[in-house]
Image (cartoon, rainbow, N blue to C red):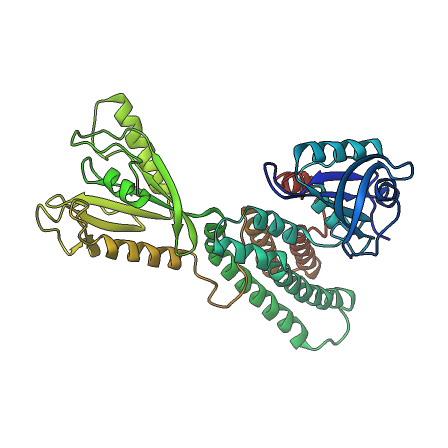
Length: 440
């Protein structure tokens, strides 16, 4: 039987502001009675009907609007409960009047993520798919949309369920070895069990290693622009932003704090961070800027390390792209410490098209799909859960006692179950669904 929330909830599922249509969504056990109160009788399920919406349809008291009405009896609805939608005219007065009529009929405003939480409670989706819905609502780029849509469609859940099914078979074989120690079970039973554990560990480790790509697509790729003072870092930021985002001055140490701009490259959200020039200084404020610059260098997915012609760096940061600026004033080396240098002139524009193409290639490499075609994980929670399951499987291989190995396998099963929400996730639900907008 479908879970029916104790309360009937409602929310405006479309954005506020001037628009032609506003969609009011309602869900819960009292939906049928409430809809009849507003429009008189139920329309055919899942078919749009044009109806007048009243404060009280029985007495024809106070006409509120004329709207398209959709009736969704559970369990074939988004939440799995009875529910309906009113496609209203989007005037603020109309929305306010309908909301007041809903409250008068016994409904209450929904909390953030409450519709999707009820869908989860009714088994309409698991926890990973629910997170995909949140990501789909927030998607700003094509890559984010595709990743979130695949997760909402269950691609990631199917991968985790496949691992869980394989682990169940391993656990069944392990239980057989525990329950029938004196039986002449074929020796290949245990060897097959161990081989499958090794295979699962390898699959999980690959998934973890490739997980950074999915997280980068979801949150965006971060480039830190660093180098000595007057290397052209702020000029590069302004060129990337196509506006004067940072002050450009011949005075060394002009940039004291990190300046960020965001954009899209290769269909992926990117953030460029202009940092203070790296040098020894006795100025306390500039020294703090240098400290923050080094922090951003460590946190970035890629470092754009700039230098001016004739001032090649003595140290190359990890994950750096070397950019030799001011080629109009002098030559720059083709490579520094084995790292290729990208020659540019922000004054004349030389090499900037090639730099942009290189940055796009870098973004594509940092967010490339899995070589195996498997879906990418998108959140730190997923990575932590897979790591925990993997650690338990590695622990199982270290156990000589069959009972202890079986316990490690059960712990791995629980870790996978928490990922999809099948076991022990009550403490996670508020955190997961609290990130949703009200009407979702």
